[in-house]
Image (cartoon, rainbow, N blue to C red; front, side):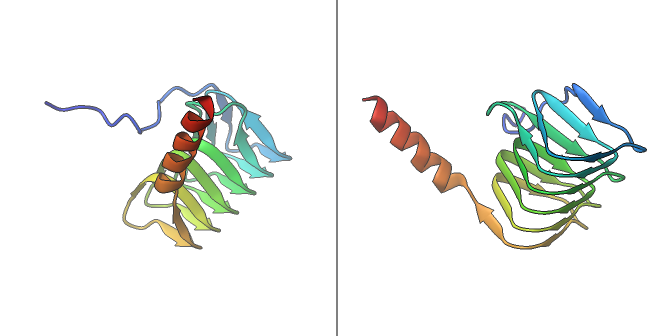
Length: 134
């Protein structure tokens, strides 16, 4: 009767960037990444799959984000691309364009940029890939 949303990110966290941590440079990760500190650089998943980025209220990222699942409650300065699921919690602030397939936006979240729906684009890519396999 009640089913869990399959698009929601998994809660497993493999890597933690603590509140007092600051990283200058791009990060590629697998599994789950939680950011409580500051990153100046791009954040991308190493393989396209079930990678999850969690940005806490105390965290910030200055750079592009490209992941399949993201839960954001901090500040992002740069474009965000979530190919499957994006949750913007109440304290999230994004300065940049947001590309998403499924979006959950809580009251209080702020986006200074465009919202771009990827659903049709992802379906077209899947159809192209299937056609090329045949």
